[in-house]
Length: 172
Image 1 (cartoon, one colour):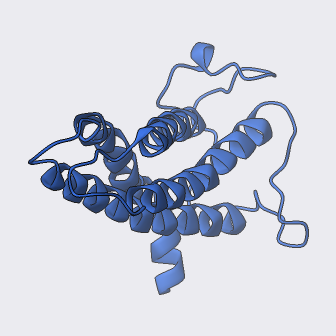
Image 2: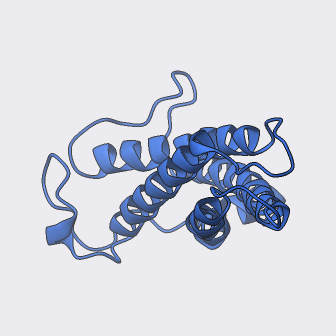
């Protein structure tokens, strides 16, 4: 197995780190809103989680794109996923949410590194971006679970027929 095949087949493993970093970032981002002495450790925690989340989100999005291309779900000429109801629409939502996670994590990290005084909190833009990133990451994981059939088909109705069983062909 070539290393690109191995990398693409590990998408379901790689997804855990950016998702958990996005959700865990919410707690220190809320704690870092207050100002005063002792706020710098919360800054460091937020920045560390955002950096780890960004790196993991880039790796996960790359493996997802590679996996979609190898399964024939991604057209490289147009760069688009199929938009048909059912599997195609769900794949398109999942891919868009994954790429949004990368953009939101980069934006959140940039907001966390803005200039501020030692006694100031991280600010509402960083908190809003952390919350948005957590929500989009949850959406990406939910649609991914629907794609592989781990969520009941009756709950995955997203504008079309209900997905049945395991939707994605096995990775070769």
